[in-house]
Every structure is written in C-alpha cells, then in structure tokens.
Image 1 (cartoon, rainbow, N blue to C red):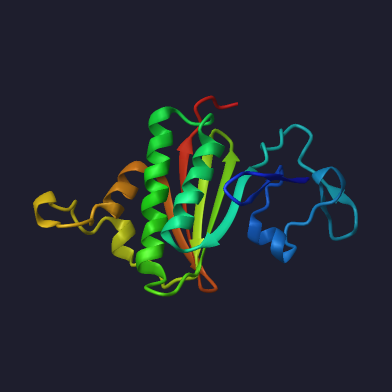
Image 2: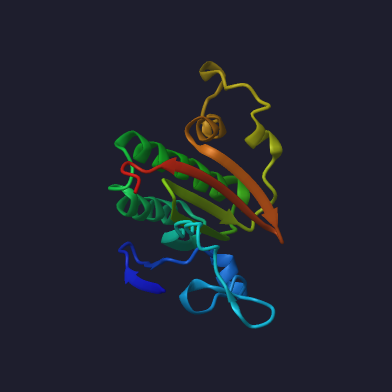
Amino acid sequence: MSIMRWGGCGMWVEQHSSSRSFDDRRHGEGQTGPGGLTPARDGAAQGPPEDVAPPEPARHIHLHSFRANPFAVRDALYAARATTERLLLIDDAWALELVLAEIMNNIVEHGYGEGDEGTIFLTLTLQGNDLVCTVGDFGPELPTACLNGERPPPDPGDLPDGGFGWFLIRDLAQDLHYDREEGRNRLTLRFPLANPA
C-alpha cells in the first residue's frame, strides 16, 4: 500500500510497506496476490512455511528524484535530514548527511559534468534494524578506485580544495555497495537505526 504525502521542499514523499524496489514496481516485477502471497504457477497462492516467521518488509520512507545541481542537492539533503532525524543517533545522522552530500555533490560535479543537469535519485528505506540509502544517476560509470580504497587517504597539505570525499564516504558508511545496470549507477549504504524494532 502506498501513501503519498507532501514532504516539504517542493516534493512528494511516498511511504509504503512493499519489499519491492522502486525499479521493481516500475517494471511490474515481484507482483503479489492477496495478503502478500506470491501466486504459484498452478494458480494456488504460496506463502512461507507455517513454522517460519516472514521477514519484516522493507519500507520506503523517502523517494525523491531531482536535477543534478547544487541547489537541488541542498534541498534533497534538507528533506532527507527531516525524514531521518528521529530514526538515527545524532552521530549517525550527521554522518548520513555528510555522506549523502559528498555522493550527490560528486554526481553534480563529476557525474554529469558542466552544463548537463541529469537526474539524481535518492531512496531511503527502513529495512530490519537499518536505514538503507540508495543514490542513483545515469552518469558515467564510477571509477573502481573510488570504492575499493586503492588510493591512500589524502594528505591535507597536498590538497588545495577537496579530495577527501571518497575517503570520508568509505570511512563513514556501512556496507557500501555499487552496481551499474542499463546505464544507471546505484550506490547503496546502511546506517543503524537508533531504536531498532
């Protein structure tokens, strides 16, 4: 079930209790029948075995797409902070904001390039005891050196401006995962909830 509500900052926020991703819903994959049961090939519904508790479904709490420019990134960060401020410990909330700012500003500056305001996608999902953040774009493929830490931490004396972004992202984010499919980059990371259910 999906509920659209006004989330401020000029956007709508969708809340639902589906375990399917935004892409799955868009393409009609992962369809379920009444009560969330998956239809079997012979038409009968199949659910989990009676002695196994079903996993808690993921809940998207923030779906947002916006133009890749600094002002839109600022607004997206404000909306993400407003959405998550009561879910995370204060240190994790600041780390989340810093990591998202670094990722999205890198997309603006390096992903699309000057004069090309492509689209950035931001999804925040409650999954188990974690807040799962996914940032996507249709820019060029992310260089592997950004993620695998091949480069040592930068020397502050050698950098006139910037250069710490990916070091901070790798240091502050948990379970950092990158994939690229059909020209779309997707970077996923996790932060622990302050009060897990």
